[in-house]
Image 1 (spheres, rainbow over the protein chains, first blue to last red):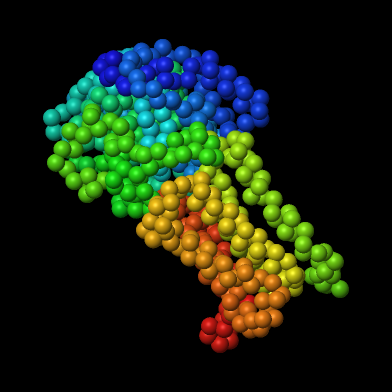
Image 2: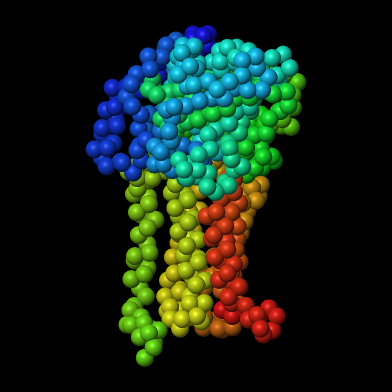
Length: 309
Length: 204
């Protein structure tokens, strides 16, 4: 159901479409095609419901959001996804929903979209690599989809999988990670109203390099938890395996909540660099739960967050 | 004349000094790209990576001079000092970008050096480069004597190993590129060992 969540960021905080289209023209005029916005979106407005309330944060431009991506299925370089993701077939798209649900099955993207109403969610996005953006996502609450398929009482976790298509994804030919990319949430995290399935940004369909056609967004966790291009959702009783945890459990925990007091073994998480400040961009302090402490801290009451990182 | 002799006689006519001028340009070019959007929307890390990568490539070039002479007879020793000093220059630039643009916070710089193994290792590699760079001149060869000077300059081997391990340790997941650098450096070092002769006999 759209409109439950009241964002503290405002629609007026975003860059207007006219403004970013104008920027886009300026940039291509300046020969900034090196940014590789090759996988640009179709310019169809999604008509997402806008959310009120605001704090005056300035979202990143469409170019920034769609040219600097971690999507290792298309390469490990930040500009690889923008250059390579155009090969991904997103229509038709099917999400298999299985496990401890009443109505398991293969749900087409159109079928999923028919039962939800889209709304704008302007969220902070904090990467585990200590950079950050602010993104005006378009999507719906994951809870809406889970309620539709009927979560059985024994289910405690939700797991997700990204598509693996060697013929479309050059990055999966090498085992950077154990493909398919896997992520998971505890059921209460998945049902939290902040957790959304995003299908667009800036009121346009999701660019492929950002995880088209449908991806998860969990704004209080490091970005890698927000799995892209989802083809499978399973409800389970056991905590599911997650890709980065499988690759390096010491560095990437199951929870991976944004926490400035728990460092990554190789770098500090106390500060982050907002994308878009250029060569002299100043670091800023990282907020507990990425600024969503009031909404989610209760999920972890009594837990030692340095143990459960 | 064999082909390698012909190449060597052509190389003899080339001076080494233009290398310094040409080699000085890439960091300036990357800085320009970073200032004008050519390195993408997050130019700090991109600049840091470009300069570090340039330093590693030049380290490999430095180490390749001797095996190239042994295998093909082509002699680039005359240019090795310039290649080595340019390596040091690129690594200094890489370090400056990390200090000034990336970390920014002075108290965190020292904390990172002692707390983060990949930074400790990278910094150790840089520190070992300093005496090598300072003595990369004819006066130092005369003052130290060729034997001592050669021993000192074998620190380059340690720098190369530390530099490539630094790269291996900083990437996420299982990635091929840093392992290729490490393997190349290990092969170039292994080629210096006189396997059939005395154990541990190493040639410059």
